[in-house]
Structure formats: structure tokens, C-alpha cells
Amino acid sequence: MKISKKQLAGQFRRRRKKVIKLAQNETDLDAMLVSDAIGVRYLTGFSDSGAAVLFDGAKASLITTLMFKDRAPAECPGTDIVITDKSLPSAVSQLKKANGYKKIGLQKELTNLKAYEALASSISRKRIALTSAVVMECRAVKDEEEIRSTQKAVTIAEKAFRDLMNEGARFFIGKTEKQLSAELSYRMQYLGADRQSFPNGIIVGSGPNSAGAHHVPTDREVRRNEPVLFDFGALVDGYCSDITRVVFTGRKIDPQLREIYHLVQEAHSLAIKAIKPRRKASSVDKIARDHIMQGGYKEEFRHGLGHAIGMEVHEAVRFNQTDHTLLKKHMIMTVEPGVYIKGFAGIRLEDDVLVTADGCRSLNKLPCHLEKFILE
View (tube, helix red, strand yellow):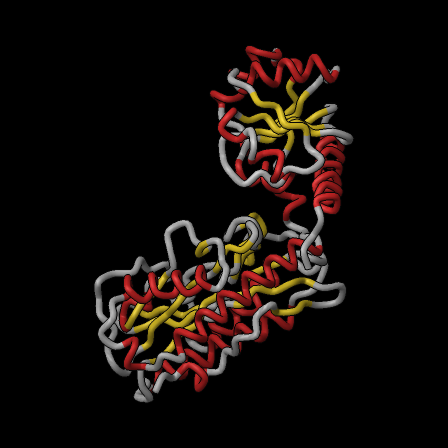
């Protein structure tokens, strides 16, 4: 369902009002300045870098250059477009005077000292209020359009992966990890993705390389009867998916690897069943971690159980032992337990999960059963 420009304008306005309200709960201000590319896109729809948005509860001004004179109005309904050749602090100073703003908010976690000093010299320190990362806090809970975009990103990524698997073991054997990473990336984009969703590309680890939790694909060629771990995702309409599956290039699978696979699958299932609003993120991690430890593996589970996902593939809330954030309806989290044995192999299974009113729902249709991933 295509959303109209009027609906988009309303969506961005609601997001900005929510951000302003959160910021005003922390400190006295009447406008916010956001300049990181993801934050600007979330609040206005502008999809490039090199812009900033100054906004209050009623209006917003996107500050950009002549390069984006035509593009910015098309992407940012309901936002005033300010084309300038001045520095950002100078442009903000002019808008502050024009709108009668007394104090402008900056997110302290996303403001470097140089940028702060430049703005302070333009509008004075007493006119700046520092807040927490209020935009990220708003982004943690998705609206219906964000959920639809993420679901589309999952669907495209899974379709591309199924098509790749359907090529069979012969297609995989002899190809390098780099080639398979590029092949899957191409297939996702061919199906409509903007691009693959990871900053450093799709992870493909074959044989012993699958034991690298965030392995970088190499020129190693895939062999018969070994595991190949794929950690992949698509970026669609600005939203990411993040999925991990392990395929086997033949039916000869080491018994210990089968055991590990089933252990990880059980931990994955237990964690998903535990997700619901007001449950601590750390408690979900503990459920999966305890199950894997009881199976005989402790240090072999080398990372947190998962993380929030949205406009970035890794967002603020984490399923780990130290993040005690309470889950909320419409958060989208990954669930990705794994066991990695250096020199042998690694297994990770990952789904993208939407927190619902009384539990959760996986956005994935791709199964986790081992037998479904043995290539003939």
C-alpha cells in the first residue's frame, strides 16, 4: 500500500512532536536541531547526508544546499526547505531569530565538541540545551509504516536466499565466500531492495570460517559436506532486515555439529517465546544463554542474543546481559543465539521479531529446521 504525501507529512509531524515532548521533559527548550543523517531521514524523509532539521512542535525547516534544491521538496512533505550556502550555525542562527526560538536542543550523545562550539559561537551557549538521544528513543518503537517496510525487507531477503538455495550444492561448491556474498547481494537488489543492509557487506563463512561470529568473506572456496553460514539482510525504503541461516553442502554432517545446531535452534525458540512487553531485554538473553550453557557451551556463545533493528541494522536496545530496557509493543528485535568453535564450525540462527501487545511475532517465514538447509 503506497502512502500519500499528505499521510507522510502527518507521519513526520507526529514523530517530531514526540521528540520535542521527550526533550522538553528533560530540559527547557522550544526547538530541536538534528543533523545526523538517520535522524534527519526519520524526521523529514530526506534520504541523503549533508542536511539538518530544525523543528518545534508545529513546523520544521530542512537546512541543505543547492545540490538538493529539487530533491529535498520531493522527499520532505510538510517541511520547509531552506537552501543556503552559509554554514549550519549561521543558518540556524537566522532561523532562530526568524522563529523567535529562545533555546535550541542538541542530543549530547550525537553532538561532537567541534559542532557544539561552532553553534555556541553563533547563538551563544546559554541558548543551547543538551538532551539525551531522544530521536533514538522514539525510533525504538515503530509505527505501522515502519513495520511494513521492515517486513518487506525481510520478505525480499528471504526470497533471494531461497532462490540461491534452490541452485543446489553444485552451485555453492567451488565458489568463494566473496562470490556467494556478492551473489546474494545482487539477488536481493534485483528483487527490489535498495541494497544489502550491512555496513561491511553480507557475511559468508564456510567450513571452519563459520566459527567467526562476524567473519569477513574471503577467497576460500566452499567444499562438499560443510556448513556455510550466511548473515544477510536487505535495505528497503530505508529499513533493514537481518537474518542468519546455515546451509550444508551435502548430507555428511558431523554429529557434534548436528547437536550444536539443535541446541541453538532450541535456544532461539525459547527466547522468542519469552518476548513480550515489559520484559527486560537482559532476561530474554539469559533464557537463551542459560540453555546453551546447560548444553555444555559457555564462552562459545560470544555475543548478545540480539539487538533492535530499523533504519540501522544495529539500534540501541540490546538483548545482552547488561541492557535492562523494558521491551515495548512495536519494538523490532533480532534473536540470534550462536555457538562457535574455533577451527571447527559455528552455528547461528537469526530472526527479526516484532513485539506485540501480549507477546511477539516473527517477521520471518524461512524455517530453522536443519533438514531444510541440506543442499542436494
